[in-house]
Length: 324
Ligand code: FES
Image (cartoon, rainbow, N blue to C red):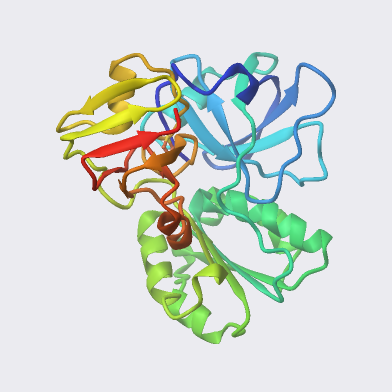
């Protein structure tokens, strides 16, 4: 999933030193990178759906879902698709990463939580969007919960975890465009149990269709994870940001986000994707009204008016006081 440049990626206690233990091909253009801790035997615990930020030597940062079971504490596995027309992170990983090299990763974060107690989970994946859902499937199987997966991809050869998921038929359903398989989101939702939770991860077009198809379902049972921004960032500028803890004032200019302004002034803040999809730049709001543009905060969280994602959100008030 996701990007950014690296100065200011959290404090040192938010980072983990690790080593690349192995690289294996999972599908055409998709490799699994096995990351193990260099200090101690175990990584911090993860929940299904969590991701880590990978801080790359070229100064970029990318987020990837952890695809192994959460019972597996001595390693994280991430599946990386080589996105040739992408923004360069996956290409760098595919061309430069070597077994044995040291890596710096962020602690796991989870913006895509599994409601383990749900009576039934409907999981919908597009392409490499299978990654967070695959970890959820392992968890649901472990808990012996009821679930079904609908997985769309261009070709079987370019889809990850197909062999492992084939074993789980009839819970798994594949839709390969090369085989004329068409995934009808409305039909899937219509035919699902009324009390199910719905999850979707895939390209933006699929996620927008998913939002439409699930519009009548209570929001707490609808869960989506975006790879890229859906809305434009707030670039209007013309407001003041007060950093309460460091006692600094910053004027946000037209054409820049709050994060851009802080980077310009060399103020150290955590960030990764710079698109409002990873959650790493979230800060507390003490005063003022944010203009939210992210895909992380729920409607309820926005209404609380106590936090915001500064890489993309702006301000509806002339002044914002942040807990920074
Ligand atoms: S840097 Fe990813 S949400 Fe802001």
